[in-house]
Length: 114
Image (cartoon, rainbow, N blue to C red; front, side, top):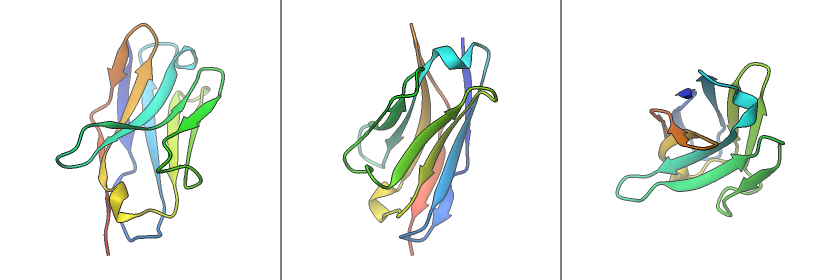
């Protein structure tokens, strides 16, 4: 079983940057595929970015070139660097760990507004 705790959300102006972190515990982090998802008010949860246990990455078209997912297996931490933020990036961002089962964090709010 995996426990996930997100941090790093907040209020930022359009064009700004934030870095989200997800601290994992309870299992062997390096064996899990990890991802970031987000859910805006009134919308379904959607994939933002994923990173496989081997390090390959994938991104939603809406964030390609602006967001970067990375992982630090030595410190059991997942990151999402978000640059050139837009108001439409406003959402609760969730960390996900996937192997045989899916695990979710509680989420961290990101608000992009002037």
